[in-house]
Length: 490
Image (cartoon, rainbow, N blue to C red; front, side):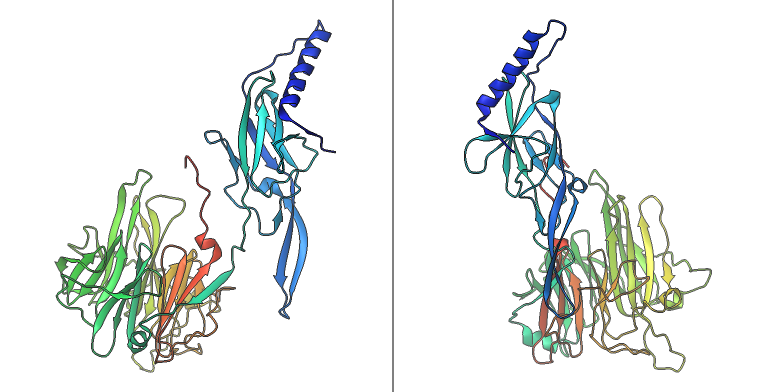
């Protein structure tokens, strides 16, 4: 049974007991201390209630327990705060949980009561309610000093892998329906859309998927139907009419260089070390001769990149020339290291020997200390079951630690146009129908659908809809927008 006492009386009693012990034995020496601190805080078993949806559509709940020690509680001595960086599982019940608390020099611990100003003496065998923020007080063994800590434990309110789509109400729905080509890119959470209809090419932008405005394009001589758009190191890059431009906002553009040899600007890799020094800064493009080009001086000059063969075969003829997408992912473990992936199609000629049924994938490991070349990933050979079909107007983006793709009419395969999202967790080597990440109900695309991750945890699908009104869908995988608990020191 938990006995409730007021802290002052309990502290005096503790000091009195120590004094009594000292006075009752001439052969023992007891030392008291005046310093106080919590040194450890570990959760015991936690009860969790889960709700699942059965195959018939009805909900069912079940209860299980797990070890709370799997979720370390951190002690911030500067702010006198106890917290968990990794939130406990959805449905965790912290109203009755055992905890093991360690203190410096054996100090005593009390929890301030929830409903009054009294304190309850802590015991490792009595459960405590941690479902809300609690005040934990520790006293020195001499009974003269105390220190209060706040205990604030986080529990997830939503399942990590749940995915939701929201259809955005847009004023440019009719314009979207008229576009024959759309290339979206994201910079600082803003989506930029380079789009062409039968007569004009424009660039639009939106910070939320709902409100769209035209970019001013000041400094751009002409915006051609074959113009291409990319992002690298906090800037937009535009190739139009053989001229490369850069911009930070889509309105004001600066001419970088004239280069008639480039056919498409792809993107770039910009990585920094732990001191925030830029150690990798590379732009990539495709040349009109079907080569991968690289620039290490912000687009001023270009050179053919290493297109080393794969398994000693010359696969340069497999470089995509249509529906080309460029996806980069920085390593979460090593600074200055990342991957670059090119996903696209070989131009369809209609010839009898043009039988390739899959999209083509090229990869490169970008490493500041050990530069490497590109290699062709033969997905048809690696795994015929998990392939990305060859589809017209293929679009791909980086999202949720992988590549997400969507495509239109199939070429030499039985895929259905705009019927699903394809997901690759391994830089395009295999492709899957990701559980929970399906197309939203009401989704429509007549001739074109494109996709882009905004870098802030959201993914957008932009389509021409039914041909009369285009659509913008904003999706979210819950875990992609979770944030870390704020820490004084990283």
